Image 1: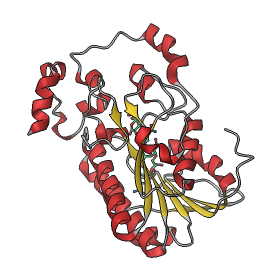
Image 2: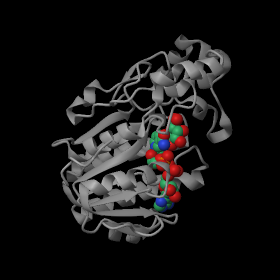
Image 3: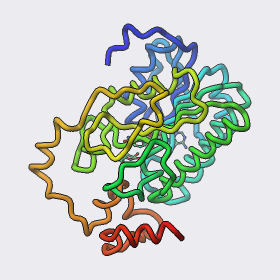
Image 4: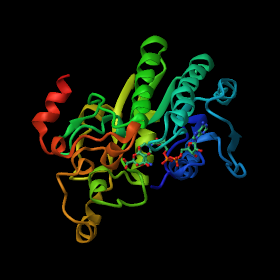
Length: 292
Ligand code: NAI
Ligand code: 15L
């Protein structure tokens, strides 16, 4: 996406998780929108380019995170564990780390955060449902649960302290969709950039939740309730569909990973206790389980 015509709106932006897959993608793209891009990660960041400040920091270190947010106008918070992992890994990075970012934002007077949440907050919704932006959490593991915590934290810090957040329930953001599931969940890098910029610049967001997804005709997510953000995706997974369908078998509805939106994540996590195969087949039984 060409950003040459976009006016610089920020003096200093902070990008956490800048050494990760999406961080590396956004690092170059966000520079055009600010005088200074502060990039941070626990992993090496390489040399700071012109217009950059590079700070290696552990999100679990409250003092380091407080310093990281000094002089910052807005934060794009991508840093943390990005897959299903043991609790011992998720707790410091995603729970303590995200709390540290919000508490530092409050104390440093930062007014806007774009938070990389995940579709795994709602991974136990079924693939035969279309759910709205902001649909109730049904996390598919500890990772999804940690992202649900981040969304609730964002809500609390808006209600109590006025720190605005756009929580992006990102689908699958990769160069191209890799499988049938990603025909529904894919978010192109250009649309990711559009979405992050919408989250940073929409005039009033409070705490808004939006799915990070391209204009895929097969999507399971309705971003209508988040249209105030002004995010209009321009890419679609459909041009990859024929190739994927030619190499992949049709959906096996006895496989929970092909019934629930979280895909393979529903088979991971604590005790690896997955929904029974027959339960995956029977929506009414799943619904009864929701009632409990
Ligand atoms: P990634 O795993 O490539 O990047 C995450 C970065 O966070 C890594 O560079 C890692 O070193 C850093 N990090 C981890 N623990 C940290 C700590 N304690 N302190 C400081 N930095 C730490 O993940 P990716 O794909 O770039 O995703 C970025 C964000 O977007 C993540 O929060 C992920 O959960 C979220 N997301 C990504 C999706 C995707 O399709 N790529 C889908 C849904 C959500
Ligand atoms: C995520 O939350 C992960 O960070 C990413 O690596 C993908 O697995 C993505 O979800 C997905 O659901 O495809």
